[in-house]
Amino acid sequence: MTKENSVIEELAELKEQALSKISDSASLADLEEIRLAYLGRKGEVTSRLKSLGKLPPDLRPSAGQELNRVKRAIDEEITGRKESLQQKELNDRLVNESFDISQPGRHKSLGVFHPVAGIMEELIDIFTRLGFVVVEGPEVETDEFNFKKLNFPDDHPARDMQDTFYVKNGAKLLRTHTSPVQIHAMLKRNPPMSIIAPGRVYRCDSDVTHSPVFHQIEGFHIDKNVTMAHLKGTLELFVHRLYGKNTGIRLRPSFFPFTEPSAEVDISCMLCKGKGCRLCKGTGWIEILGAGMIDPNVLKEVDIDPEKWTGFAFGIGIERVAMLKYAIDDIRLLFENDPEFLRQF
Ligand code: DAH
Image (cartoon, rainbow, N blue to C red):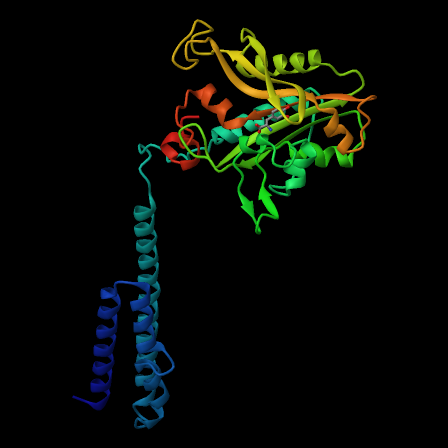
């Protein structure tokens, strides 16, 4: 065999080897590796081209031509293989990413208002439509605002009505009701005024109908010639909006230090419609709030002249309203935040 023939044969072998590797390549990454091994800067074909000069002069032209042919053949083969691998990878992706259109859609579950927040919003809506303005006050209070200015005398048994959480060695306390917001508001504004104050309150008390934390809405209205009739009219309107027009309302004489006269307000039982059942303990009536005419002593505390101005006030327990509305018999359910329970509202 001539030298020339042996060089050509060697190059043919190199080409065959390269082409078979190319057609066996399984991925674009594999193919790139093969390309570098032959056509890269240090690849087999490239280095042979570089060392053409080392061949005897008479062999150089034919070896050079052949080498270039091999190079082109490998290059073309790589380009072709690259296209088919790209197509294959695209197909694989389409297959993997395709979805089953017969599958039911995944929908996001919508949140609901906590019943306490829902009732709170409803009450705020009813009263703001009547012209009441929302005001908030602090949850950590002083004895001065929670009791004294609300006409609770020192050591008066009325303080025992509300078991108090004291903080900071008794200098401060957690408000036991929203009534102190009346004082804050009256000190800041001049009458006439119509205000509601929603918020959290705290009492050292816990059983199926009492929670150490609960919510109230305080409401009050001060103007000239305000009477008990205005109070009853306002509450009747509120009760009708909340529980329906056929709900009856009655005021029973009661006692609160900050109102005179004071009343406990009952509504006709929504379960038995007044006939008498377990919920209303056979009376046909259910107590829902406390109210009264603002005591002149409270007005004097904040420099409002009780000869000129009068007012009514009321305090509503939100959990109680929610429990009655949704027939919930244990107040603790409202604080456990069990999603199964909350999803019902
Ligand atoms: N503050 C009272 C309580 O928590 C509720 C109350 C009763 C508020 C009568 C009032 C009212 O404004 O007039 O038990």
